[in-house]
Image 1 (tube, one colour):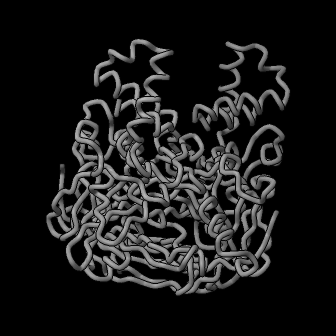
Image 2 (image 1 turned 180 degrees about the horizontal axis):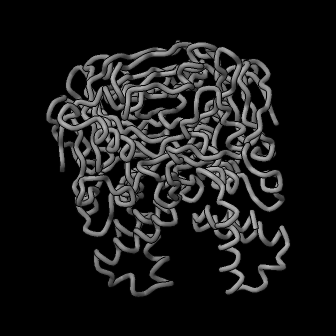
Image 3 (image 1 turned 30 degrees about the vertical axis):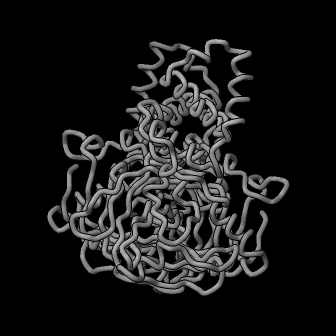
Length: 289
Length: 289
C-alpha cells in the first residue's frame, strides 16, 4: 500500500489520483447562457444524480488547478440560475470533447462542435438536440468549496423537465440502456463506453442471504472459490437440506459416474461452473456433497 | 421525444429514469461505525468526487422510495462524522452487491460478505482490505434534500488520507486504470466494467481547434462524415495549406493512381479511414484535394 495525506502531495498529483480512482464518472454536458444571452456548452464529470424526490443533480466546475481561474459555465449559472444537463452518448463523444476547449468568452460551443441548439420548454438555455436525454434544470444553490486552484463549486440543480428520445425507450416506456449507449469519464485521456462492459447482478434477496459468516469452514476457506463466488453463494436464504443434496448427487451420478470419486478441489471447480451460470442452489449441493 | 415534468410521474418511475440516464455512476463502498462501535458497510452510487483542493467527495444515502426509511450509513455518519470510502473493482463486485442487503441494525456486512476489516490510520471506521483504493474521510456536513421517500442526503466528505494498492501503481507512481479494473452502476440490475469499454481521446488543443463553424460547407454537410468525425476534424489549429494538400495528393497518387478520379463520396470515406487512426491532418488533405 502507498499511503499519504492530501496535504503532503501537490494538488495536481492529488487531482490525478482522484480522477483515476473515482471512475467511471457520468458526464453532464451543461448548456448555459451568459447575462447577454450568449450560449455556452461544456462537459463536466464531477457530476451525478443525488435524489429523486426532489430530483436533484449536482455538477462542479472546479477552479482550474493550473491558474485558479473559473469556467464560463460557473459564471453563467450564477448569473442566470438555469442550466440544461444533456447526457453524452458514443455518437457525440468527439464533439463533446471539442467543446471542452477553452474558447474565449462569448464563443458558442454549439457552433464550434457542430451541435444543434434546441429551445427548452421551461428554462432559457438551449438543449443539445443530438443528446438522447435532456434535463431542464433550475439552479437551487451554488456552494463554493474553496478559493484555491482545484476548488470545486457545487451547482445544485433541480430537474424541472425531462426529455427522452423515443428511440431509446422500449414499449413499456423504460430506457433501453444498450440503445442509450452512454460514455463516461475516467482518468487521464480515458473514457469508457458503458455498454461494452455491461453485466447484470440480480438484486440481493429481500429475505436476506445467509452471509459468508454462516458458511461451513471448508467453503469459507476454499482455495478454489473467489471473493465473487463467495458473494454469490452467500446470497441464498438457507443451505439446501441433506435430502436435497443426496437427491441431486444421485441424479448427477447417473449421468456422470465420476462424480462419486471427485476430490474436494474438483467439486469446488464444478461449483464455480454452476455459479458462472447463476445456479447458486446447485453450486451449494455440489459443495455439500 | 417523450417529455414530462417530474411532478407528473411517480417517484418510482422518475427514479428509474434518473438511474438509467445518469450513468455509469462510480460506487462508494462506504464503511461506517454506529454509536456503539458496530461496523457497517454499504455501497452507494449517488457518489462522485467534486473538488481536489480541498479534496471533497459526496455520496447520498437516499430515503427509500418504498417506505421512506433511512439507511444505517446515514445514521452512522450523523453520529460519528467519519467514513471510509472504498472503491469497487471487478474482483469484489458480488461481495459488494451482497452487502447492499438490508440486514438488521448492528449486523456486520464485512462478515456477511466475507470481506476483511483493516484498521484506518486517522479515522475510526475500518477500511476494506480487498479494495485497491481507500479514502479515509471526515464528514464536513450532511445536507438533507427533502423529507419524502426518494429524498437524498448529501454526505459531504473531506479526504484526510489515501491508500493505494501498489499493484495498481506503475513505476511513475501513477494509477494503471486497466489494473484498477473498476466497476460502476447503471440502471436496473446493470453494472459496467470500465476497462471493457475504455477508449482514449487526446485533450482538445490548447491552441484552440478551428471548430465546425469554420468548415467549408461541403465538409460540414457531408453525407458520409459523422458527428464524431466532425468533432475530430474541428480539433485542428488551422486547415492545411493548398501547397501541402497538392504535395500530399501527388505522393498518394504515385502509390494509388485511382485517387485522381475518386468521387467526393470516396474521398470522404477515405478521410474517415484516416480519422479512425487519429490522423486528422491527412483526413483534411484528402477532403480538400
